[in-house]
Length: 171
Image (cartoon, rainbow, N blue to C red):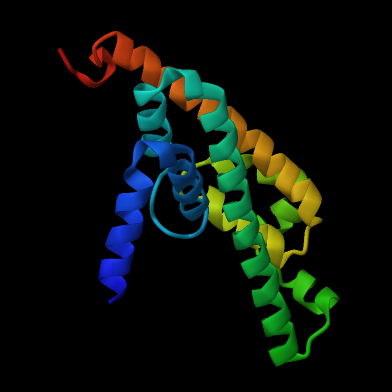
């Protein structure tokens, strides 16, 4: 039953009139801890309809940022659950934080700018939530980093497509 529902949903999202919603869903899901990327969906839609460059970038940025905030919320919820289970005070936990947590605490929400990085970006959002960094500031820095990544990556892919994919050994 779930497979047929999922197949129908994916088929509907693949229709051209749903292009931006597809980009939003893919960007949202790829910003969680699921192992997937949104760049192919963004680039594909822009290749099909170049006039949608900026709307696609904005929709992908919003979806990816909201997905990052879900990871932030999951980190915050995990911290609350651990605190409730251990019944320890935050200052005791802070004394035993590993180096990465101390680094993130030092930079604060600004570190969320790096959420666009592959492999470490998604967990970074969850750790920011774990540390209870201010969510609106984290979201703002995430959005800026993700927006710049989409602009740069899409521009590079478009340049590669125009030159016949020579960057990747194509003809």
